[in-house]
Every structure is written in structure tokens, then in C-alpha cells.
Length: 624
Ligand SMILES: *[C@@H]1O[C@H](CO)[C@@H](O)[C@H](O)[C@H]1NC(C)=O
Ligand SMILES: *[C@@H]1O[C@H](CO)[C@@H](O)[C@H](O)[C@H]1NC(C)=O
Ligand SMILES: *[C@@H]1O[C@H](CO)[C@@H](O)[C@H](O)[C@H]1NC(C)=O
Ligand SMILES: *[C@@H]1O[C@H](CO)[C@@H](O)[C@H](O)[C@H]1NC(C)=O
Image (cartoon, rainbow, N blue to C red; front, side):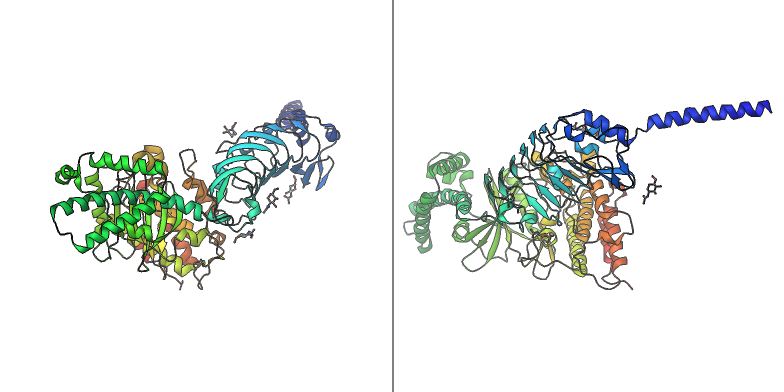
């Protein structure tokens, strides 16, 4: 009997100790909030925050400024209270159910609090305070549930943090009346409902995904352009583009004159055509003088002098280097030839400007539409190697590749000329403004597009076996669509000619997990880009996390994939705007699985291109 009692006492003792510890280990929400309050200043409005009574009773609040649900705090609303001091995020991390926080209309100062500590946060309201300073680009990393971010009317400066553009759930972003500068990151959230960046110092083109907001969302910035503001190809902008063209042409015209002079000296009787050319050259030269400014001309002339030597015409005509690079080198026989003059005369329109340079659309006299892409940063190989590589790319011929029609070579920049595609890129169809003639492709169309992409890629693997990444820059904006939605890959095979620094910084291959871990790309790197493309096409979600420019972006594609695909078997992953055929779900799932397979972090576990081609051919429009 006595022994039993002792055992009982020991058990009770243990239980008491255990209970004591577990209580002191898990602070109550009241303790946590009282501790949080200590870091604030001027807390008169929070006088009823004390441990005598618990903050929540069921769904009701006993304290001011909090929201309760089922006995626990899920929100803080401390607005208009004259609060100052610091916001102790460390303390708040201990509130397991906190989802929303508002500190609007107070006197908080200093940098943005570290929000990533509360990764489950759905909304944060900090407008109308005195927060200031640059926000680190990764300040919103991993906040997969964040829907609303209000930072308006503060003094934040520096670029808009890139991590914001990668948030999969973001629908509201208010940044007006700060001092944000730089360009607006590539927001691709198709569900963005509220957006305002007015009255900052922003510059550059407004991303496509944001151009259905009214102009007042962008007003009062330093230099923003594009819908809904003035078009980036407005007369002003066009002149800049034209100046470059004119400058190049002037150099070409000068060189042409030199050549003509030489020929005139050699033959007494100049052919009719050449005389015409002289006149045309002179006319264009005058036009050029009018448009281009002296600095540009100087620069170009020096460049020209540098590349062909400052020798006299006779001497240079004998030298090997004499051939002035004034004409477009055509890679295809089946095209009507034109030259820089034709391009210049064409009414040009800037289609976009990327890291490597701008893209123009040019309508030639005969109605032919061409796309001209300017590339800077293409000096990885010397001139001979460049010509050789271009000829190699020019020989490629496949219904799913956009052929390179020709190119223009200068040391500082290259122009690649290709056919213009009516339906622009897959990216525009997936993420662009659908009200403007870019219809949303249905499931059979998307399947057809992806099948075509894989065929094009398979061809590249076969034809360019020496390239580690035969495409190298596969992404939805490099998949163009013709009238019948046949995909045509573009910007392929350029890895060898692009300068390594720029390639590493901007090309998709170098965003792959293998490049991150081993500093190398492999034969299966393009497969990874293909996987991303498949998932993007099926979900309609933009992989902004890894497409952000620059090295600073966190390339957490795994998190992106997880955030867009969610629990497996969940049909909601598919783009809700995608019309489906009957019983297509099983087939869509099959394709999604191929995409996921291709995205595996371990490159060796990804299927190879032949396997992908076989698997994707088996996916049908309709299930049985
Ligand atoms: C409410 O809280 C109680 C106890 O904390 C818990 O057992 C219950 O599951 C909760 N109810 C809901 C709907 O989550
Ligand atoms: C914010 O918190 C995260 C998570 O604890 C941490 O990794 C990061 O370094 C913090 N950032 C700053 C600027 O303190
Ligand atoms: C812009 O378009 C998106 C998606 O089409 C829509 O959800 C949003 O409400 C639109 N915004 C405005 C301001 O019209
Ligand atoms: C954006 O903010 C400015 C300044 O507060 C306001 O005038 C404008 O109406 C807002 N526009 C939108 C679309 O929210």
C-alpha cells in the first residue's frame, strides 16, 4: 500500500513539473502581445492591453485593435493611434495564427520591418507612416500567402523589391507617394486587382500585365511609358531608335560612298544603278544629319575609322579588311534582299526593349514585315567565328523554328533580322491583356503549342550537338505564334556568342538549379526550361521568381512550382481561363506530370529530349 502511494506521489510530482514547464514554455497570447507593446512608443490607446484578461473570447475581442477567431488572435489593426517606436516582429512570430497586420496612420520610422519572419501573413498595411530607406530585393521572399501590401505615403526609396513580383497570391499593391526609382519589375500576377505606383521616381516600360490599370496608377513618375501612358514608341522614343539606325546607316552610306568612289575611279563608266545609289546615299546622309546629333555621328565615324583603318580609300580597297560591313548578310536564299536603307525607310516601331537590346518591327516598302533585334553583349567570339556561327544557325530549317533571315555585324552590336509573327509570343497570350485581340488559348491549342515546342527543341538537339544548351534561352516570350498558333522558337543557339557575364546574368539556362549548385549547364538544362514552360502554359502562372533580371533574385523555382501546383491531384492548378475539351483532365494531368519531371532539381533524373518527345506525343486532346 505504502509503495503504491509513493509511486502515485512520484507520478503527481512529475506531472506537476511537466505541466509547469509546458505552461512556461508556451507563453499565452496575452504575454506575447504585452511584450510586443513594450517595443512601441506612445501607447496610450492600448491601455486595456494587460494580462488580467485574455485578448480573445471565442470570436470576440477583449482588447482594442485585435481580431479574434475561435479564441486566438489572427489580426492586428493598430491604426490612427499616434504610435511610434519599433515593430517587434520577433515577438509577433510567436502568434501562430497571425494573418493580417495594419499599422496605418501612425508615426513609425526607419526601415521596413522584417516581414519574412511571419511567412503565413496574408496582408500588411503600413501606409501613412514615415518609413524610409531602400527595401532589400528579397524582403518578400517565400511569402507565398501574401495578398495585399500597402506601403503608400511613406518615404521608401530604391527599386521596388523584386521579390514582390514573384509572389503567387499578390492581388493588391499600393506604393504611391514614395521615392521608389528604377523600373517596375515584371509583375505577372494575372489576378492583380489593385495597383498603384503613382508619384514615385520610376522609369521605363510598364509591364504588359499591368496595362489594364488606369493612368492614375502610374501618374507622377519620372519617365514611365507604355499602356496606359504614352506609348514607348511615341515620336520621341522612336527618334532615339531611329537615331541609332540613322547613325548606323550614315556610317554605311559613308562607306558606300568610299566604295563608289573607288569603283568610279577604276571604271570610267559607272553603271546606272550605282549612280542612283550615290544619290540615294547622299539623300539619306542629309536626312541622317538632320536627325542624328553630332555626338552620335562622331562616335560612329570613329568606330568606322577604327574598324577599317584610317588609311586612304585606295589602300584600304586592296587590304583584306576593306569590305565595309554595310549590308545585311542574308542567310536564306528564299528571301527578297533588302538593306539598311530599306530598313531605315521602313516605318519602324519598337516592340520591346530587353537586356540585350531593343526589338523593332519594320514594314518594308513592299509590305513585308520584319523584326529586327539589336544585340549588345555579343562579343564572345571574333568576327569570323560569329559569321560562321550565324551561317550554322541560318542553315537550320524546321517548321517550329523562326528562321534567322539575316544579320548585320558591327563590333559593338549585332542586328538579327527575322520574319514578323502576327500573333506575337506565347507569353503575351498567357499573361497579356486579353481584351486586346490576344485570345486566351484553349487546352487543345496549348497542347499543340507545347508539342510544337518539343519538336523544335528535339530538332535543335539533333542539329546542334556540340552546344551544351542548344536553345539556351527557352521561355514563353521566345515562343512566337503564327496565325494558326504554330509555335516558332526564337533566340536559340546564342549561348556561344553572348558575352559570358551577360549570359550568366540574363539567360534562362543560367537560372537552372545545376548552374546554381555546380556553375555548369548540361545537356538537360534546356529540359528544365522546357518543364517550366510546360507548367507555365498549363497553369497560366508566370515564373517571375526565376525570370527576374540580375543576380540578386532568388531563383527558387521549386517554391514557385509548389506554389502553382499545390497538392497533387488538385484540378485548380490549371489556368481557370483555359477552355477544356470533355474529359481532358486526365490528359492535362499527364502533361503537368511531364512538366514536373523535366523540372527535377537533379538534372540526371530529368528525361532526355527524346523521352520527352515520346511522352508528349502520347498526350491527347480528349480523354477516353
Ligand atoms: C477551436 O479551438 C479549439 C480549441 O483550441 C479546437 O479544438 C477546435 O478545433 C477549434 N475549432 C476550429 C473550427 O478550428
Ligand atoms: C529576416 O528574417 C529572415 C528569417 O529569419 C532572415 O533570414 C533574414 O536575414 C532577416 N532579414 C533581415 C534584413 O534582418
Ligand atoms: C485587369 O485584368 C485582370 C485580369 O484580366 C482583372 O482581374 C482586373 O480586375 C483588371 N483590372 C482593372 C483595373 O480593370
Ligand atoms: C493612385 O494614387 C493616386 C495618389 O494617391 C490617386 O490619385 C489615384 O486615383 C490612384 N489610382 C488608382 C488607380 O488607384
